[in-house]
Length: 254
Image (cartoon, rainbow, N blue to C red):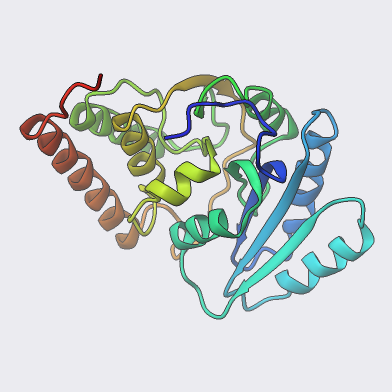
């Protein structure tokens, strides 16, 4: 576990922003612009790693054209041969990155610049910077209720009191490589955060804003069978880890 949270030690860059994309040709430029605008207000060196996760549209071409027209920004594009899913792209991106810190930004530009600035300003203050949403415009009452139940369940099973587990935390990149989650969908951040807390990571929580919630089609929506299975896997993994921790407590260290 790395406990020194000050950017720029032995890493080439302070921050890697990973942007996994699946058919985001219409929104990826806005996402890149948001990230660029946020980093212009911060003193960190950074790179943007875009992972095209098997898109069938022109996402990769649009990213390449944007990178060519913005040579002042370090933008790298990696294309998965076929769709591997968000979690796999997220973990693989940690191995491809160069920054000390690591943070996922969704390719559909759901976070305003102010949210990114608020999160990144906290780099160095803890191992994990956990954002939580105060208001989510456009999100249905059902989705809000499911989110609260999910957070409650993770806290009950893990023993923690985190306000929100799917707010795309900023991590030390090493920690994502070392403790990368095994979930394949919706629950991967909860699995990673609780695992890191079990390992003694420090954290802070900060309130942030999001843009209007986007209603997606059934395949991409969080309310599908794949993500429900992922949530079940996450909750089981969190529960087993807590039982194991109680059954086999670590010996106190000198």
